[in-house]
Amino acid sequence: MPSATAKGPGPRAVVPCFRTRDVLFSVAMKSQDILLLLKLASLEHQEGLVAGLVLKATLGIPDDWRGWQDDLLPPSAAPSLEDEAWTVRGLEESTGISKSQVSGALRRCVSVGLAHADRRNGRLRANTRALHGFVMAGLKYVFPAQRGSQARGIPTAYAAPVLAGRLFSSGEQVEIWEDPQGLLLGQRIEPLHPTVPYAVRKDAALYAMLALIDAIRLGRERESALAGEMLAGYLKVGA
Image 1: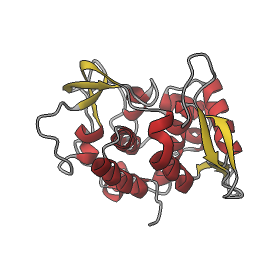
Image 2: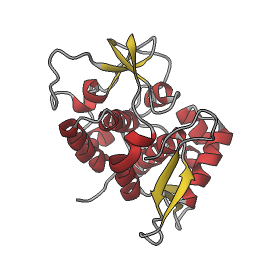
Image 3: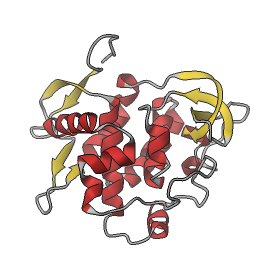
């Protein structure tokens, strides 16, 4: 299985070539690649939807989707959908990932078929079917979930609002991304990328997808299967 090295550029992941569907090759994937692909998927979801409430109803996002105290960030469930949102600068602002890292990540995703340019307007789109397949088959091996000590933070995985009432883990600690404004005390889970707590504050759908991915990364069969089904809905992947 792929494994991370201490000094290398990033985990080496065997990724299907989505042009031929039968060729495998190795690519140095990084965690920001997955975060940015999810952000592109969220932006595409919001395209054509005027209000955040419409977006929430479409995706089944609960009203209490925030797991942190109010801060100075906009309260809308959906970020701006102007052309700027799809640019390197816009993605930097909405995810907290630097422009150079955004550029590198997008190039990697395009090169392996995980993203492509829309012929109509040039905007990058995530190959959501391929992304979902990679998340389900290999993400927890390439980017395994690391548990830490007890801390205060933003609920993720089984504790996140997107999974509220769907899973029961009586007697177990809730999982959180450490954050001083978080509402819950629980077991710290290292986020997929360090900027995740920042990025989710701006985007309800992104928060939901990243929490679902954590449920998959934590590796319990029943929970992973349910989270995968829900993630497929967010990514608009057909059965």
